[in-house]
Image 1: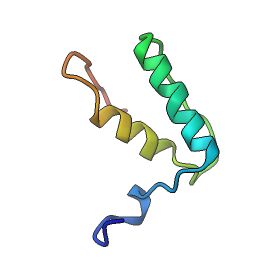
Image 2: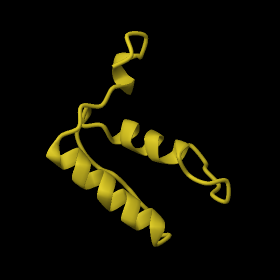
Image 3: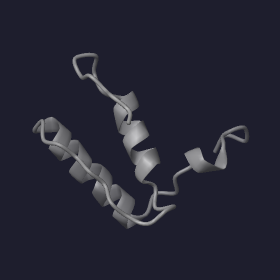
Length: 64
């Protein structure tokens, strides 16, 4: 873990976050929309930010 990383950017992987990451990968690969819903602090923003940062250039990303 990087000591300078902000706390909100750190994700401790659990069985659920690994499953979510896999499902997100499948949906993006099939070009289907993805919407994550859950309580605060479960890692939705970090999972999506990580995925968006690794997308190829042929994807257009809009943050709302």
